[in-house]
Amino acid sequence: MNVLLKQVTIISLSSAYHKQIKDILIVDGVIKNISDTIPQENCEVIIGNDLHVSVGWMDIFTNFAEPGYEHRETLESGANAAAAVGFTDVMLISNTNPIVDSKAQVEFLKERSKQLPINIYPIGAITKNADGNTLAEMYDMHTSGAVAFSDGAKSIQQAGILLKAMQYVVAKNAVIIQIADDKSISDGGLMNEGIESTKLGLPGKPAIAEELMITSNIELLNYTNSKLHITGVSTKKGIELITAAKKRGLQISCSVTPYHLYFCDEDLVGYDTNLKLTPPLRTRSDMNALQVALCAGDIDCIASHHSPYSWDEKICEFEYAKSGMITLQTLYGTVNPIINDTEALVELFTENNRNIFSVSKPIIEEEAIACLTIFEPNTEFIFEEKMIFSKSKNSAFIGKIMKGKVVGIFNKGKMVLNSVTQKN
Image (tube, rainbow, N blue to C red; front, side, top):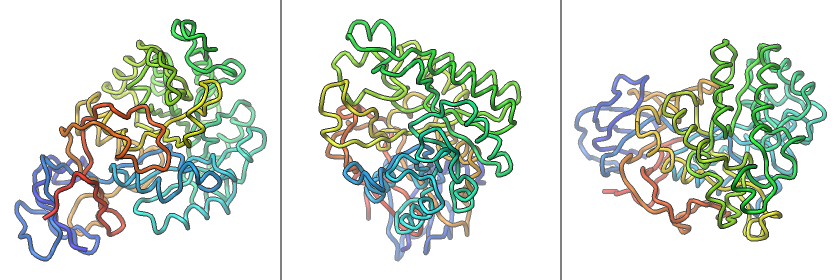
């Protein structure tokens, strides 16, 4: 298909056209022409309100639930949700059934994703069955296409196991991903431990459970000279610990979720089970500190932690509800007004994450294969349940005002548009 993007502002630090307004002609999946004006002949024309284009966005921590939990999400429904909101590349965590802990499971995901509109990068489990006890087939998984290693929503609790994993991936130049949560401290908690948990009568998870694990993981990293990524950082001190480790020259990076930037433990006053999360929502002070750290460049990238759950897994007593929410479709609209800098945001979504995980970066140049995200940074809208592409609807962002709307993506030779796009 031939597609013409009319008068788009190009945002790409590696492109000679960075910050310029141009027409872009795509022919058979290849960028054929970038000019001030291109005739509208024999092509589909995409126009909009203050259109911007960057290389395709990437998310580093998503659960599409397949295989095993297709009632929550499938590779197809998850990919459609991702594509509709600008993501051309997604890293999938291992928490499926069976767990992605072998070469066969990695190859299954790679094969099943060939027909999807986005690129899938499996994250292999560090331990067999993600139980934290015995190392999985990390070498075979890496050879088959695993882009990183993590037990996903389950953090490694045994220092000896994590030490061996870190030593193992050094030769492969791979990255270990951890959610920092010391279960010996946080187990049984339902929300952040503090004034709000006392008011609501819910058992708490203290911030020190996160901060102690970050501290111990940093020392293991120093010992092994490996690569570590801490995701879902939720406290001010957690960011400070990671920033200090970077200054020591350690190969450490971090990401935060959109909900830790937007919500705090005060928002749990209505016992909304969509706000039952891991790590839990922290204090308003922590939330504000994360926003400041994001704008200051202390946070390397955003991770969606997209966690779909069916109706009956969320509409129940708070104690029994599953932990997590869907976030892919609201990630941009929540982060955009916080950082309020399109260039910096695109760098978070396209450059930093690919650099951390050694994923090849697309470019916006003539004769390059088109891998693009088209968006309107200043368009506002109210996020409604009917907009959700995921099979599950467990989002606390329903009814919230979003700033920044994605028009669509071009990837794998195809244009995927959402409902706000104008076509001529």
